[in-house]
Image (cartoon, rainbow, N blue to C red):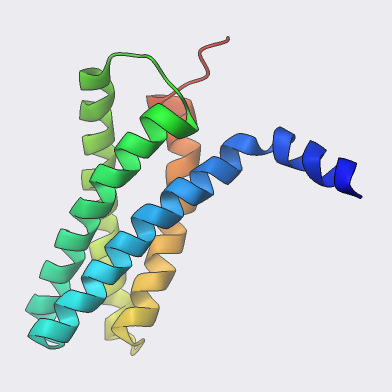
Length: 138
């Protein structure tokens, strides 16, 4: 049983690291969102501002963790950062639209934010490993 567990961890180490890095960024992003709407109330404007500020802080943590820890990529940081920013801007636009759509449909903003973040995580892993931090051993 222990051998199976250790083998599974080794096999899926990158995914597990991505989940830890993403989880840390998500906690910061979600916490900032929660703090923002708690301090400034639940208005359309405060929800969007809190979302953008939280997203930005999560972005910084995510880029650093993914480049240096998850994918351990030694490619040119400036080029990767530009690609990461492009992906983040697309994610920000799509996640903001999705967040507002879910809230419009009647979901509580905190539930909607949680669902949006989960959707973005799956999309990000696939794009990061293929486009921004491709396997250097190939």
